[in-house]
Image (tube, rainbow, N blue to C red; front, side, top):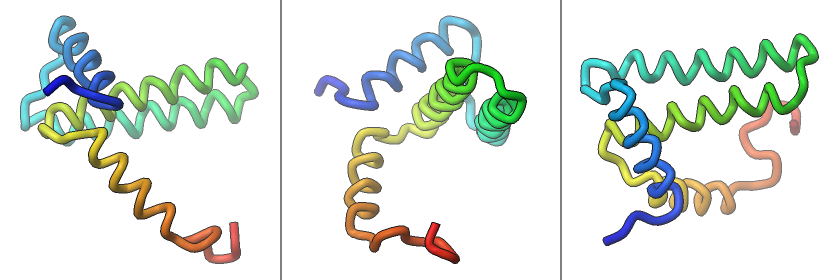
Amino acid sequence: MEPEGLNVKMAEVRALCDAKGFSAEPERIWEMLALIHTEVSEATDRYKKGKPLEAVGEELIDAIIRILHLLSALGLDAEAIYRDKMAVNWERPYQYNTVRGG
């Protein structure tokens, strides 16, 4: 079966990471999680410093790339997890999980 949706991007990211020597070995899982955090922090910093939104977006895309690499390393189906999670979120009430409504 051919990959679909997010799994297509995940396969592309995995191919790039493998080609560039970034392993997906189980002992790197903690590091991969930390690197996702790093990219989000870099996006926050760029936004806080008034950098162009494209620069913020570039860091957010780096986070997505790292997330897809990690999902691949874990052997997960990104598209199925995304679809299932979105179905759950659509069933939640307006402004769910907020203390003061947003």
